[in-house]
Length: 461
Image (tube, rainbow, N blue to C red):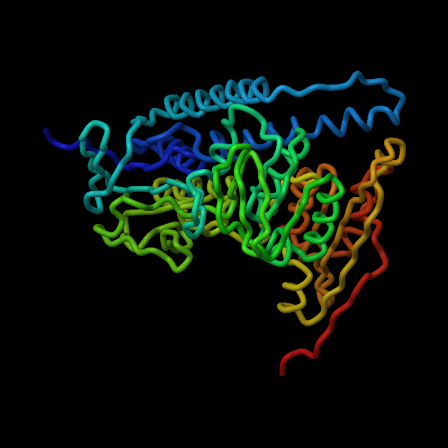
């Protein structure tokens, strides 16, 4: 039997792959997509979406407690983990069905199978043994959790994938890691009532973020009862009668009910057949691509986390759309990966865009820093001990705002709007010219006038 022929074969039906498939189809391409797990990918099935639902759930404890300061009498609340997980699962199933329906509406043929490259134009579907010939192939298989070096008892450790399906809420949990996933799940479990210990090998959490943001968030997390242990790692995990005995690299040990590693994700490229067809791997471990997401094999492209460029869902979606515009819409489109806003749904939230203070000082001749820390208005009556933080980084020569950093309620929402201004190269004078909306936390962003710090150096000759 001859192989089926299509214009585009997409390996992976996550956010980037689905967007690429439907846009390519809208241009008239015959498209087939293969997904071996569930349609929607990491973000929809076991990432951003279910995580945000759990974040919402974790915040109600503080809302109940804060209500008393506003005159409400709230009965002692109770929480049921199985109910939350069941409701979350129903919503994820609904979203998966919506993604599948989108592919059907755009006449994209979906096959539930692992797909492996046999040559530059042939894909082997392992579930059925069928082979498909494709003019163009797009790899959008995302990333997978990576636990790091092997240690004794690693089989007792879970990743964020399994955290979404635990049968019960752990009373004590140790989370290893200091990035997005680690601090977010620390806040989730703590807010739902778990005793949380966060272990990180570095000096402080959220490596790569502005140092003031890292310091502020750590203080706020510790106020909420999360124990943060830095400059150490988990050396071994042993199952004991009353839980898991965790030994740290400094020989300290503690017993918990669950151990979760959030030590990063790696591009999901194993056993795809990339080597056999000559697809090169970059030094970052992802598929090497050019500005149009084309790999070293001219008709094979890759988008999203599998390239290990900027591993965020909206970036994967933008890359997938740009790929389809370039190849099938005949509109060459390169994605601009600069000034990408991002949020960490920790407690409190973090929202950032652009350069950190340290990066700005390294890259620019003159840097002006504006920052403020204040008690949110809501906390005045609730009595909660918490503070918000905001920082603006300015190119002192052009007056352009090159970085914004927020820690506090709704930081993710704020940074999305701020991203427009930063992308448009707004100046500090532009910010200052905007009338404040009072009383809001966001008004601080247009009322900061006093420089907290200025850096300058002589222009290079």
